[in-house]
Structures are given as C-alpha cells and as structure tokens.
Image (cartoon, rainbow over all chains, first blue to last red; front, side, top):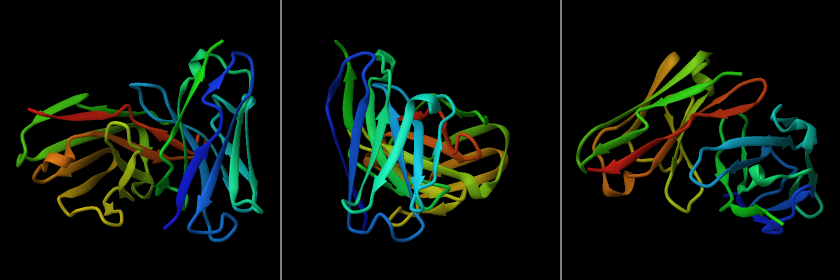
Amino acid sequence: QVQLQESGPGLVKPSQTLSLTCTVSGGSISSGSYYWSWIRQPAGKGLEWIGRIYTSGSTNYNPSLKSRVTISVDTSKNQFSLKLSSVTAADTAVYYCASGGGVAVDYWGQGTLVTVSS
Amino acid sequence: EIVLTQSPGTLSLSPGERATLSCRASQSVSSSYLAWYQQKPGQAPRLLIYGASSRATGIPDRFSGSGSGTDFTLTISRLEPEDFAVYYCQQYGSSPQYTFGQGTKLEIK
C-alpha cells in the first residue's frame, strides 16, 4: 500500500516561494502508471487540485495556478515536490500530496498546513 | 471548465436512516470520470466511489453511487455513526484535470 508524507515549512512570507516535498513509501514512484498530485484545502473550505506529475515526468497544472506552480520528481529519493511562487494570504491552506491511476485519487498524505504571513 | 454543484449543503439525519447526496455537473461528465470522497475533521479525504458506481477497496456496501450525464448520486443505505462527515464529488477532465464539488456536510440530527 502506497503511503505519502508531506514535509516543508509551515510558515512562508508573502511574495516568497512555498516549497513542499512528498515522500512516497510502499512502492516506487517511478514504477506503475501513477499520477502524483498536489491538492490544497483552505480552512473550512473545499478541495482545489493544484497539479500532477506522471511517472514519465510530464506535468499538468490547474490553469488558475499554472503561472506560479512547478511540480518535479526525484526518483532517487522516491519524492516529488511542489513549488508555488509569489504566495499571498490566499495560498494559506492544508496541502495534500496524493496519487492515483488517473481519473481518481486513491492515496492521500495526511496533509500539512502552510500559512502565508509576515 | 466543468463546475460541480453538490446539494444539499448540509444534510441532518439520524443513524440508521438513508442518506442521498446529489452532485450536478454544468456539462455532461463521463460516468467513468466521476468519483466520491469522504472527509472527516482533521483527516485527508478518502476515496469511496470511482467510475460513478464502483466502490473503492475496503468501502462498505452500504455506500453506493449512481447517475450519468450531469446528475450523480451517492447513497448511504443505513447510516452508521462513523459516516457523519463531509462528502465531495470529483470529476476528471481535460483542464483542470480534477475539479471538486463544494461538499455536502452530513451531520447527526
């Protein structure tokens, strides 16, 4: 069973870049046909998909965030990462890393709260 | 972009009752691309249903999904205390790849 764990700073200053890493265990990030996604959820609100990377390295991003998002993978560490630039208070949320075969999200990390504040 | 609208926003029921949650899409969605998730406070969402009607691994058979086109339904046949949570529908599309409904909160009456 795939397990996912997010890590990274819990506090980011406005205009800076938010950086998170997801460590995958229970399977290789480069095997199988999995998409590795980032999804966020502001407090008390719904879910917003940020983007995903395939095992081949190809990426898809939410058009609303595309200009600020980069998702990459490090197969040697079995990790994938999120960078979100020029953050504002509106980017404060719980960030989940997740994975699935494509049409749905099967596995989720526990989530990590990132607060944007000076 | 396809917008998913869930109703009702809040559903108040008692254990043992039947729950019916609705998800309506702004455009037709392939049944293969519609999923439902359950989220409890402080936890990550959990996949319940994919392909509109297929239960994910380990999901009890009291959970069922149905629908096609623009109207989809999640039914919980007989509510257990652990079923009270927020439920989200999600569709898979071209761009963005995943969009979620705003959620239905199922609360104890």
